[in-house]
Image (cartoon, rainbow, N blue to C red; front, side, top):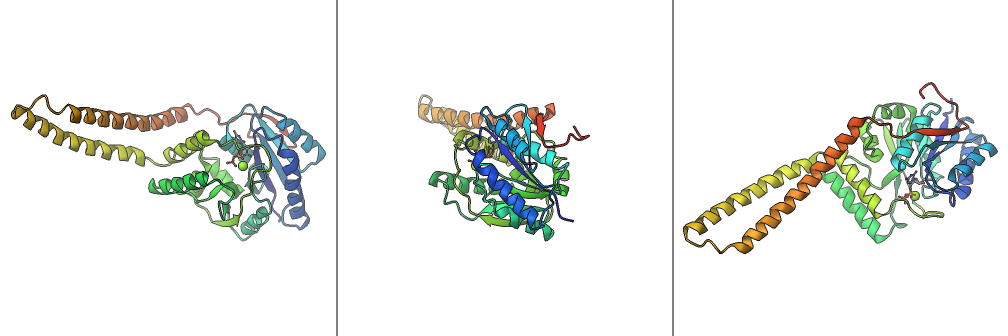
Length: 321
Ligand code: UDP
Ligand code: MG
């Protein structure tokens, strides 16, 4: 039986991009349906992540033009990762496989056919991996490299140069439904789940229009989330740092006592200042790191929903709502 494929495409303020890329997605879907690779019940599912522009209007009219388009609209902006999980959890109820990707044309749509081939060979997850980073600035390339090394150092398992362009089977999505965390970092969760997987390579294009929603600040937040949702190593580093500083302090105390015994009490102002600055700096950083984890625990204990679906187009309501 040919599988039902759902493309899951989060969109936030993408009115400049959607009119162009939606046609490309549909052409690809139709060509795969025509070649008998996927079922005619396959869909392109847009997730409107609380856009403030005309994105949802565009999605709504697309769903009226062609039954292969469908959409859900979240009640407000919840961020890329939440929009993605909302779409995936909705698609899980209708599809055998999903492919998630950006709506800006950066993820090479032709590659999705190879992903389906890999699935048909028996893989449950297929990762889209960039074969180069030519379309990135030197700054983004270097920071990405440093980030991957840092994650590896912290023991977090991720696929380098893979963002959120990936195929997942309904079995994987069912397993993913069990991950209720609100601090979502899908790039970490998916490899963590296991399952038979493979990789397809593609070259990432420039954005067709509009601008990125991941400026430096958001990238840093995602990077911190990636580490703190998966590793407690930073806490352990603090412990070792504490031990190291304690050792230094011990040496400092002996030095201070010896100085006092030799009657040399006034001297040492510089070293004292240095020590106070050093130790208080370390303490503030340590508190910050611990605070990151406490904050995460706080958010998790509330068990708040990660998203609320406000509207659906071309999608049946299901008993899971
Ligand atoms: N996106 C979203 N919600 C947000 C920010 C982004 O749904 O709050 C979507 C966006 O429309 C795009 C995808 O997530 O389809 C990735 O965002 P973007 O292309 O801006 O990131 P970049 O590719 O530059 O890292
Ligand atoms: Mg993009």
